Image 1 (cartoon, rainbow, N blue to C red):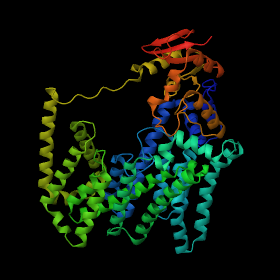
Image 2 (image 1 turned 90 degrees about the vertical axis):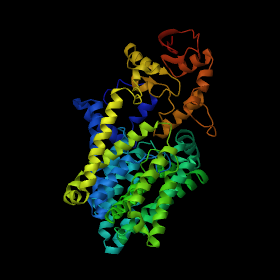
Image 3 (image 1 turned 120 degrees about the vertical axis):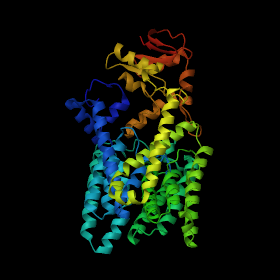
Image 4 (image 1 turned 60 degrees about the vertical axis):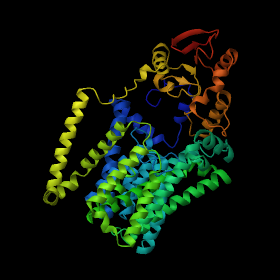
Length: 572
């Protein structure tokens, strides 16, 4: 719609996004690049490559900063990229994903802000947080807030009031570039919605997994607490972290815990819409970065001491592809390390026997806690993780090549021959078709509703409006036509939220106490009578109706397209 105003002209959700929202600058950036002839797909790809490259490079620098070793940088990058996106966080949040969305692009900038703030280069740090705010407000704003107490501590210790003031001016200035236009245009805090109404619709109905702490999974809380506790133990026993580093890392975790407590109080107990908008559970990915920083430093420390078994356990527990209790296992291993260190028994872990037991233990944990995927798939994931670790460690290996060749020449040769043998076996099994077959890739044009949307686009004008089942959120994308309502398309403006809630009551009307899952979203829609669905379509000025033949079999309207059970009717 930014590129061609004729698209989605009757879609209230898209039209609200044309107003000033927290993603206004991001959308302008995408549309500007696409309008220059690159196309949307190539534009997203280029920005994603830039964000990913920025993330990897900054993680290298962050890891190296804390342990003064390239190895720590490689390990931190490996952990961030290979740890399950939801591991050690709550509120269904993550550091980075393999999809080109605004938060991912913003994280590519925010991560540099984190690096510069840890280096006490506060001007640059808050400049990057500010730029991240423009792309995705919370990704830049929340880490900026987490570092303010560390900035205050630095300014007090170094008697640098100027640094404090200029850094905060930069940060607040960028935040105002987002908030002030929204306030002036009436898209937020417009009194259209009360605090309770906003939290009900934004939190309980649409985003309970992000905003409502009591709706977060118990497993998430347990994993998060175990990882946090284990991290505190590693910080206290670290030889590589300085006293200031320990205090700063702990402070970020304390502030994250405080943010979660504040989120609960002012969302569920005394509802204030501001705290729901801040989505304070989104601070946990930054606490996760601290967890992984401390883990990478600990692995580097024990590697230097020759404790390979401990290195394997700390490095691979967060990344092993299981679905249960990784946090508990991480804490148990860390607690064992602390106990052994207290009684000066860590030297026992330097033996080959202990290393072998660690490998066997990891493999056993993977086998007995494996998800639904087959063991061969899990082993393939582990192989790819080892490959990525090897690639990320190339700078370290080049730096240490002489030492490695002298010390591990026999082991390297053994590893090479072992890899060659397994490769031959793997290719032989593949040749005789004894390996499990890969799952076929899903082609969206093979999904009836998506195929129907593509055909609908070819048969209708750009200004067409269609009434669709609330769960079919991708129909808008594939058809490039306006839709009356889809559940996942939630506006950011008060006016848009009000409209969304009215249409929700008409087409979905599920109470928040019920688990709002996709199969339930269409219950009311499919039970509408023929007369009711036609009346609703006409009330919204819809030109077409999408439904299933077993929901509404005899609508007195002209059929435009029919594909398997899906059918589109043309309103008279």
